[in-house]
Length: 117
Image: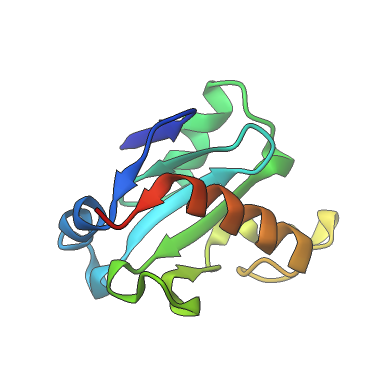
């Protein structure tokens, strides 16, 4: 698991290496949209979520995504799909991210950290 925050960056090449360990060449990630940080490279979103909660993040700010390095630079790079997103009590009724404003916030964090170098 790798925490990315502050001035950290991660390259598409590093994400590609991580994706080789996963089915369908994805990298699981959990983004804290409030603290603007992201954890990548774990078998389950729940493990990343637990790490961030133990680090002081709040549940309502954490969203699970999958990154597909081969799709960097296109809409298919960030995939909103994780069991941790299923929160009917908070208005999110799917494994995706139903609120377009939250989707935008997630993409801003991802774009802050991922570089094609």
